[in-house]
Length: 151
Image (tube, rainbow, N blue to C red; front, side):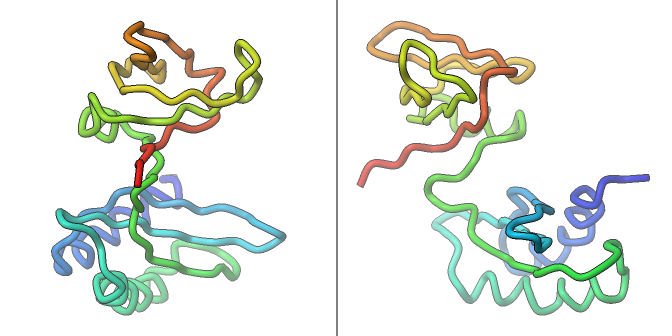
């Protein structure tokens, strides 16, 4: 049986593409005792509230009809955001050379997060260029990798 997130992503693609966007990620998570289904979308130039609405309404109807999830949940469509999480190989390829933050499960050299230029990604391991030197983080120590926008 396919994962809920994969099923929803496949169902979402035509609605997201019809709105001129792409599917960035799908999450199905439990928070504070409630389930949330989140579809993150992206597009060149940024995602507007109108884009989210254009996807949300028809996709919500399609989800009701396909009924891929047992029980109740809250459905949300959102922009991937300026500080989006990088999870898939294509995410890392797209943002190679950009500044990212790596959050760790346990402190390394007294720090639980490091910021640097994304130099590489291989099988979940991430290499950042920090102060001109490459620093590799193993998949098992990484809690989260996300873009690190400076405003």
